Image (cartoon, rainbow, N blue to C red; front, side):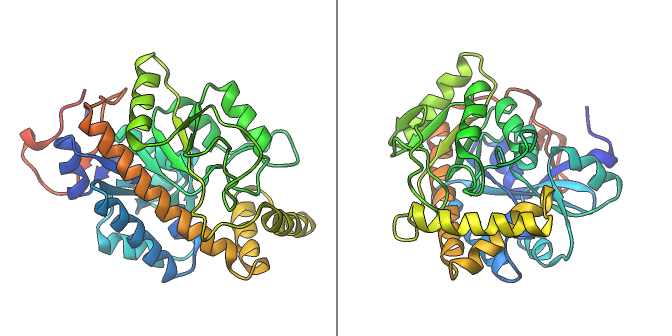
Length: 331
């Protein structure tokens, strides 16, 4: 049944055709555009990530909310508009209804992106670092974790954001039966650093191995995501000691200033850039492109070895008028 205009979700022409022809697609989040970098650096990063996905054989689908409508895939003009909008909403799963009802625009988090992308039938998602368990109050847990527990997608990241409680985050993922794949590593990456001293569920060393692992996981009846944790590129990574010192100082400053909730992560990431002389920003940009590359390769491997049907109907209406027989059948 078609969604009402109040809660509709639309695809860009490129993403619509890729999904209809069962070609590889990679979802990309947009909070890195709206809340991660200043303009115009944010626009350049968004374009670079989409370019890397295309260069590796897949179609990029940047997810965002524009004027109260969920978009899976943006045109370049829409991407440029999103990157220049001031004070937009940070959209997690709980925030879609608010943004739609108020006809707002916003960038989607990991949880928000997974929700919209999976509804469209996309299997693979690239991000920087997932949210997780925050140090401090035991109830301070990112909505990204329940999304990973309940949405079957392959999520390529550089681990969880280094400002988080990494052991607690991994414990949550284990409890919720989310496999954590170390891509080319036996350790869980610490976002800015390749090493955390913490183990992973399994090590895999090629996109095809990841694709086969994900397919097996879902064929067994599991409905959780497969988290693929790839270390940041060596030439831009920080040492664990350098990252830890900066993180501890930034967290102290946030606590003293009473900064918490959705404002905490943007504050910490900005302060880390300042404290490290831009080293954390360099690492962040490099790992985002690295993850986009791997995600595209995984998406291609999934398609080349057999199409995996979405686990619930695809809901992604094209932005352009099309004939009825061009609309992908709900499966």
